[in-house]
Image (cartoon, rainbow, N blue to C red):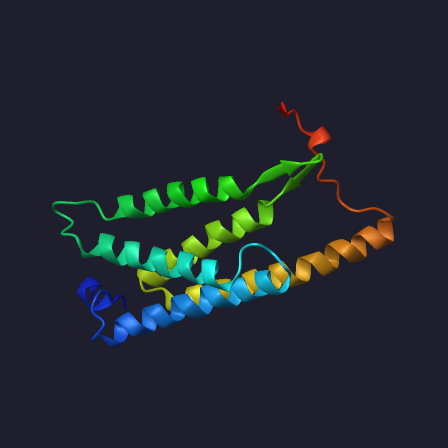
Length: 164
């Protein structure tokens, strides 16, 4: 059952603290994994992305649907986070860097949307799956590379991109 939007915006409500705690847990767990790997996206940023998204979704849901379209907030979050994610992608020395960080930022906003709409269990499961992908896929890639004798190429030369 989705709680009333006014409960999500009131610090005197248990729902407010449950949503806030879930956002901090999900964002913080993913951020910790990134921070332990020495990535720029750490616990603070990840937690703030998740919590900020929850706040925007709760605010959007608090408007009267007869006078405002709360689903537009979701669309604007996707667009805004996509812009931020694009800013972390770099091309340097023939390599593309920051794609995973951009994807993680996008996913953290999606988690915030889920939490803001009351889908806490789904957010926790997706956080666990995300952590599994971030930690497990690299091991699989490395094992595959050792078996095949090379790593997956992420060279810009393979792409048709004009560089300044």
